[in-house]
Length: 406
Image (tube, rainbow, N blue to C red; front, side, top):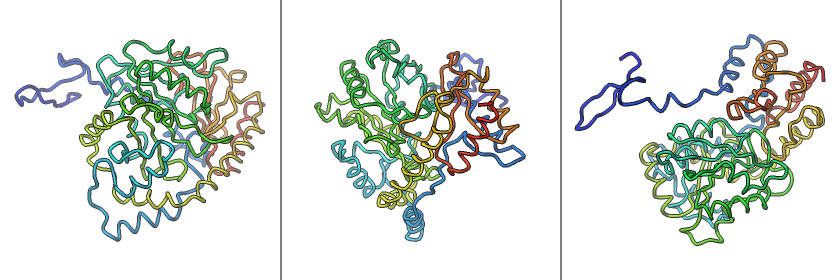
């Protein structure tokens, strides 16, 4: 059918539509390709071994308890469907882990195949024609892609700018059609951790405007000073019908289960949970059953979380010492990444990343993948990972500083 696709018209008629057809443009054509995938593919095709600082793949592997839980589930025949919301025993364990969020009841807690799918489903459950979603200016590109996939538009807020409060940043970005604010703390790529005061300002603004907040807490186990403040806790001060926070979590980071694809999310109230259930039942059927048993076993591996946190923190400290103020855009207070400001050394970090791979066998991610198109920082910034094997990471950073003449 060339570049056309099949769609169902009225009364079961088969209609063929294409990019220029009267039926309109396919929404998928508007999803931007990320230059991060291009760098990843270039690394995969590179003829020599690469120090891979462009991607977040942890050196500390998933706990043995999770491996045994997965294998035991297969041996015991736990391979049938579960409910679309997930395994009941895993629900209970996750509710206990989220005790600070008021132990969400089963109907408001969703087990998902990774936090990416959870965020996509939440956005679909909120989507309206002409809707807008506020993202941080420095953001993870998949968040932007997921907004575009729903047919909505992303608006960008400059959070953390000196002299600008959170409500001021929100008002500058939001509009009458704003349906959600998506925040990520600790942030990818920034490593920024929102303070309790900032989250309270965000929450108060969202409640006043009746705008849901999607809190991506993928890196919650990697806050390097103090404890993470959960914005969902602020919802507990309100009646259920006035609550606004979706919280999203994953097993990929703290438990090192990146390839297992297991996450979970909570909805703020029964109505939002009902709409999210419709999306999940339509698109998911059920999360992988053996992987859920692996996650259930992983929750008992508390020593793993402490070890993993300590390992990445020591790597972060060593990288910060090597880079100093000249190259760091800001010191990461959490998460797996550091953002570099290379504006004093190169004019285009996208081209620089490709040259660094070719010349010194180091993979890093260009800033244009994390910023709105045309942003002045796009050609200055780059991201490196802090979660890989420490000596290799430090060697990669040394090669970069030498290559820059720093």
